Image 1 (cartoon, one colour):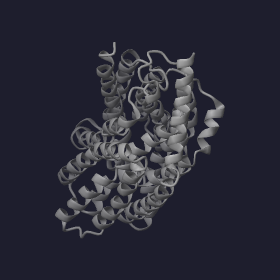
Image 2 (image 1 turned 135 degrees about the vertical axis):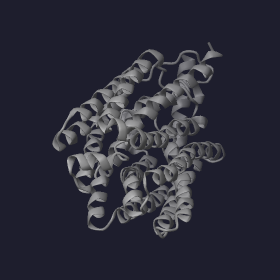
Image 3 (image 1 turned 180 degrees about the vertical axis):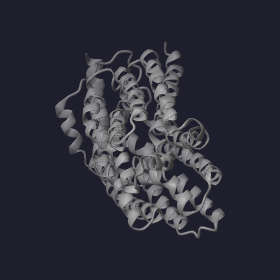
Image 4 (image 1 turned 30 degrees about the vertical axis):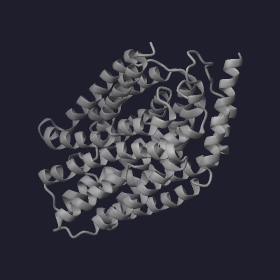
Length: 429
């Protein structure tokens, strides 16, 4: 059994990777399809922003509920349910024929968007702390690759089949993945991979506790994690949903130019997740501040290169591509490290709740990012909207990370002490 576990846990990672890949493709596909959807419903940038924000608001409201459910019940079965909901709601959004109906059905797709805390929490119980950033980086490769796959579907498939049929395809894949997760992923005891329990075949099942949930807010590191989350998602939402149209309408790129520009940039961005995770694990093994240092470097350098890129003259496409590629490598460095940091300071039985609270706080503001960007884009242009929102948010994140450096050591040590006490109690019992 001991020999099979390392191989099996990677099988779980593969299943979750494809869940996230296809889910992200479905979720992010609407960005590249902004043109034909806007034309069919005759809507403005602001109205399109409302379509995006609807799903984000629903997902935000449901984060605490999903987090609580994941910490109370079997995470694998709940993930299968989330995948089924993804498929069903995507089909609904393909059926409706009015703008109001489309806003409502796209908002319903946000129900499953808040399901990721259970996935990451389950993975944390398969992998020890010193490797989690790297594993999360691998899983998060699915996000930019999903966006790239969405671009391919939008540019090469949607013109022939129509954007509604593309949603039927991605929705159907959601139901297929639901079956795969239901039968192919086993639950893991919470806390199983913590180093203090190494070598123990059986451990006590740690159950959700309201006292431990309240203790999340007593950890000073989490205050800064919450703060950076609120600001950090603004750039991602704005770039994801407006950059495609920005290239076409404000930089004069045709469909082929968009694809051949964005495809390599997205692949570079994808590599940034793994690079960020690997760097975070490497730095964490040497210094407990390592993951925060990697994260802070990522956001400030991403802001610098995006500022330079969007101020590049339209005719200088080569320089623009180089600067956007540099932006892409730095943008995702913080993402896997923030996830790992949450699990570095919280006890196993409330990790889904902790991450859900973080997502709730960040999306409470970020849900309105597309609307804000749409208003700025209508008043000025899309380039100005992307630049103002993204750079401002990343500078704020950098300052917040500096604050987190003051408390991370003590909060990590507090968790290790608690795990040590629990392990000693297990052995004594």
